[in-house]
Image 1 (cartoon, helix red, strand yellow):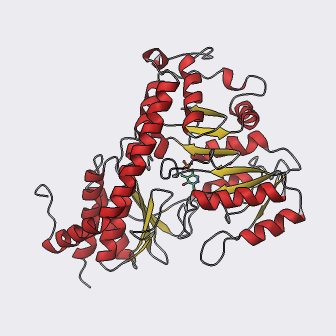
Image 2: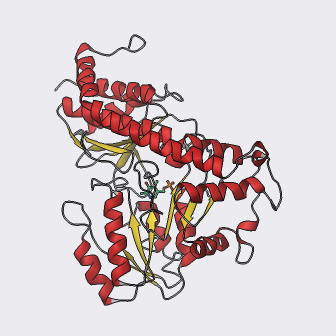
Image 3: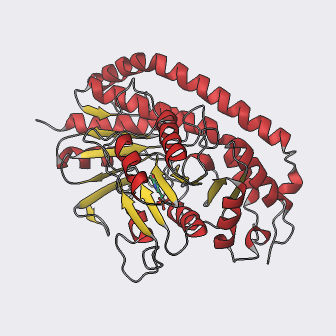
Length: 418
Ligand SMILES: *Cc1c(COP(=O)(O)O)cnc(C)c1O
């Protein structure tokens, strides 16, 4: 602790918080061990070799490393097939390819976890008239809202499925930047079972932030198609960009035709030297996700000790790496984010300020000092400056540095005289 200036009061909160985390940390270690072994075994089963790291150029025909990465990803996520590419520009782009890959004019989709994540609005056509959204192409979306406590309204899903023929049911696992609980695999499984018994619809899942946070994968619980971002959990803090889509073979193939072109699909796509990073990131992902989970649990425990409301709390089961803290006012949000930034490994000297952001109806403050731009498996926090004045925190490449970042944020909050 001697490298950083923390008050005795905070150190005492921190000790108590760490003590409180003991049991959860043991659970996380057991989970990490399981997922790490699973991933290692998959690498061995797929015969990953140094030759697979060789860069391809141009069309990228016959890039064996790219093919092995696909097979490896499918095995890790218990899916029939997968595509994993650096050329997906973001998580949203990956989800967009998943949706456009499978949906056709006239299809109806039922979103069963409320209004999807902000950046998906213009993809499905809730906003962005004329941009070429799914709505522009004649695909309709109906939304089943979450219940008042933020949990899934299973009864209404059943009712809605009986009213119309749906091509797909869309599920979002993570809370994103809302205060609803994240769906556990058990919740997703329940939705999948309802869909399978009441309709012919396929299930699609936005799996962002969920990878390696549980024992079960979406593939293992029968989700037909799912996707995520490589600058979150499955990139292990090493992949520089990209995403993956996994699931049923025929559906992944359709996505491959949207990813490049109908007909050519996954046969092209130069990897330019990115394979090694994606292999190494996937290999590290279970461990790094475990570290991020520990940062989140510690943060929850620390702010509980300090008297704040947190979600999830320090003893809840988790299925993503996101932690929110209700700090209660603007000054504390700014203080926390500035403190956290000061403990970042990159750009520690930057002082974040609240700013108007496109797509938000209030100013937003963001703390991020990462090796990869926008990476949220690295320690980062965002807070819209509006009720309930909560900050959303995620990531941490290792627990020890993540803990310091959080403590520096907490110190700034404690330093505010009330
Ligand atoms: C991060 C995230 C996305 C994708 O966001 P990008 O910033 O485009 O990577 C989509 N849905 C959820 C729930 C997310 O957390």
